[in-house]
Structure formats: structure tokens, C-alpha cells
Image (cartoon, rainbow, N blue to C red; front, side, top):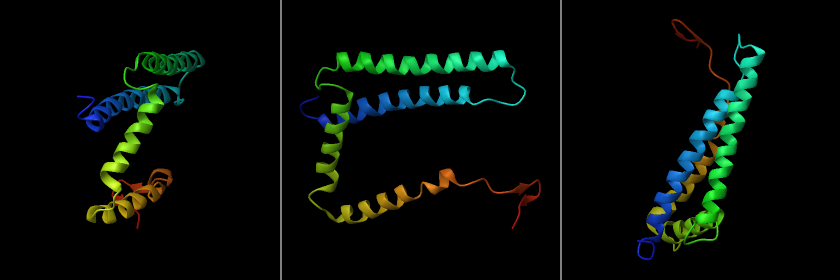
Length: 128
């Protein structure tokens, strides 16, 4: 499978691992954020759990780097996957590439949706 479907192999492998890493990191950050009415011991326990989860992520990445069969390490896998995606979907330029690249750039510039403050909303609906 690696020889004939390298892009598919890498995509499945990387998306699974990235999903796992991101999920564990999001749980760690969710626990780390202090809430109202939490005591000092609860905050200490939350910091412990969060640091334990981040340590698990680092240990998993270390284990993966040591046991990757076809590549040197995880970053090498990411680089190879990026090169294969570029060769398959961007270059040489095809008709849908002309639409793909601007659409991708617009998506990257829409990061403001994640950093904008929430709208003021009453029980009756949004304030306009």
C-alpha cells in the first residue's frame, strides 16, 4: 500500500495522528482554563491533569518518531505529504487549481472569525 498509494497512506496516517494530538491538546487546554468558583486545590489538580496530557502527547510523538517505518520522523512524514499534495493537486496547474488556490487563500484570511468578540444577544434575539 505504501508503494502504490503513498499519498493515501500518509493522509490516513497523519489525519488520525493529528486528530488524536489535537483532541488531547484541546482537552488539556479545556481543563487548564480556570472557572469561577474553583478552589485552589481544584486548580492545582487541573494543572496536573493538563501537564500529564501534554506529557502523553510528547511521549506519543517520541514513540512515533522512533517507530516510523518508512520515514525518518513525523516531520518528514508531514513534509512528504505536503509535497505529494502539491504535486497531485496544485502543480501542474489545472482548471480547478485556478479556483482552489484563491479559495484557500480566502479561507486563510478568515481567521478573524475565530478572534472576533461574540455578538451581544438578548433573550429576544440579537441586538441590531
